[in-house]
Length: 429
Ligand code: ADP
Image (cartoon, rainbow, N blue to C red; front, side, top):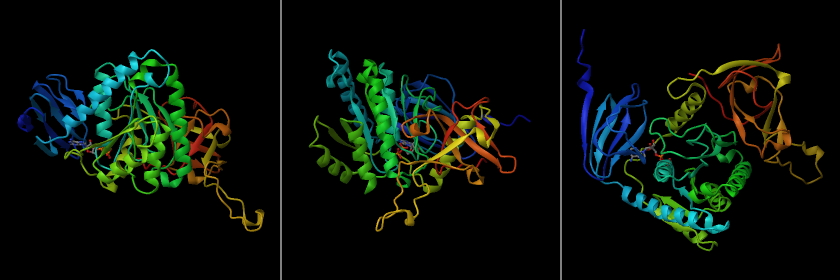
C-alpha cells in the first residue's frame, strides 16, 4: 500500500497581472488553492489556503493583480500561465460603471438619472461574453451593489437550463465552482436552443422579461442604481443581428460592450449612435484564454445543465419520479401548431402559423424525453406572458393506462397544471 498520492500536487507562481489558464481533465476533478498573495477567478477573489474543487472539463483562469502562488492537485487537460490579458481594459470599464452607479444612487429624483448602467455584452460565440458579464457582476457585488444579471443566451445560458431567458439579482461575487445562485431567478421558457425556431416568440419573451424587470426596478432604488449586465447569444449575423438590436432597444441598454469583432462594433455604433439618450458602444479585446467549444461540446454542456438542474452539480440533489393522469395536466406549445387547412381560407390566402398562438397538445408518446416548463400562468391565455416555476422531464407515457411519469426536482404537487413544451429534449445518461 501507501502509494505516493501527493505526487500530483504542483505549485504555480503568478506574477502581477498574469493568469493561470486551466482546463480540468475529462474524468477527475481538480483541487486548487491560493497559497499566498491575491488571486481571483472571473472577478471573485479566492479565499487564502482553502482547497476548492473544480469539476471535470471546467475551463477557467486564476488571475492575479499583484502576484500570487497557487497550488494544484489533480490532472488537467491544459494549464499554462499567460501574462497578456485584457483584464486592465475590463476593470477600466468596471470603474466607469461604478461611477455611473454612484451618480445614480446620489440622484434624488425618480427619473432617468436614478437608473444605473444597463450594460449589454455582445460578440460572436466564444468571445468571452459570459465571462466578462460574470466579472463585471462580481466586481460590482464586491463593492456592495446588487446588479441584475440578464441572460438572453438560450443555448449556453448560465442562470438556468437551456431554452430559457432569465434574470437574477447578483448580491455576492459569483462562486467560481457553483456559479449563479438559483434561488430567485425570473425565467421565461422559449423551449428551443436556437431562436430561429420561433424568432417572434423570442422577441416577445425578451419584451416580457424587460417589462417585468422595469416594474421590479420601479420600486427598488438599490437595484435601479446597480443596473444590469445583459449577456447575449453569439449569433450576430442577419436575424441574429436584428435580435441584438431588439435586445439593446427593449432593455434600453446605455452601454454596449462589443467583444472581439470590429465589424459588429462599427455596425452597432452607426446604428445606435442616433439613439436618445446616448448609448456608448465600446470595443473590447477578446481574451486569448477563451476556449473554443465545438457543436458537440455545446450539446454536451446543454445536457449537463439539465442534469445539474435535476441532480445538482455534485449529484447532491435527488429528484422525484412522479406519476400523473393525462387528465391532470394541460400541455401547451407556442406557435407552429396545426394550421388552418387551405380549403378553410379565403381564395388566394396562404395558411400562416401564428408564431405566438398557444396550442393545446394531446398527450402521447411524442412527449417522451421532453423537458417541459411548469408555467405560473393561471389561464392558458397567460402562458406567453408568464414566467415559469421550474421544469419536469418526461420519462414515460403509458397510453393504455393514461398515465405520464416524470422527474421533478422535488416531490409533491406541481405548482401549476399548465405545462409548456418546445423542442427541448434530454437523454438521461
Ligand atoms: P461566450 O459567452 O462568448 O460564448 P465564454 O465567456 O463562455 O464565451 O467563454 C468560453 C469558454 O472559455 C468558457 O468555458 C470560459 O470559462 C472559458 N474562458 C474564458 N476566459 C478564459 C480565460 N481567460 N482562461 C481560460 N478559460 C477562459
